[in-house]
Picture (cartoon, each protein chain N blue to C red):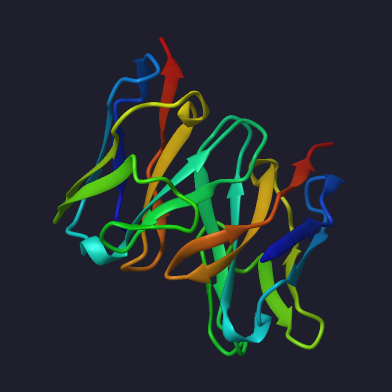
Length: 116
Length: 108
């Protein structure tokens, strides 16, 4: 069965960096676009970024452009999100999701807290 | 950017009742690119319906959607106890992919 396991969240100071990972299993990872979506505490869902199956096409939300970098390793069935210059407003649960038109499978989420 | 506005913010209903949730887009969205998700407290969202009334794997047929253009509706024909949750619509016809702010279906 399809499984996505997010990890890498934690507490970081404003201006700091963090790298999130998502380990995929149960499907041919290299066939699918993948995405990161976040949810601030008590708020709704915000799409952050997506990457094509080969990694050649990448899009970012304006709110993270220039600060976040999405990448993938198809040999390791893994998706990553490098987050730099973190701000308080980046505090959220970050979910990786498989992109199949809609987001058809989601990880359990990893909490990122940006606070001094 | 397409803005999705969901209404009502909260729907208070009893088990067995019918739930009707609305999603209005600021621009026309092809019904083929509109999805609905369910999220329970402490859990990741789960895909319910995508691409013009296709239910995701394992989703019961009491969930259905309708609509076109800029007005869409998710209907839960008879609420079961496990259906009380927050529901989000999402469009994936244009970038950035956007979500509505959610409708909470709570037990009356």
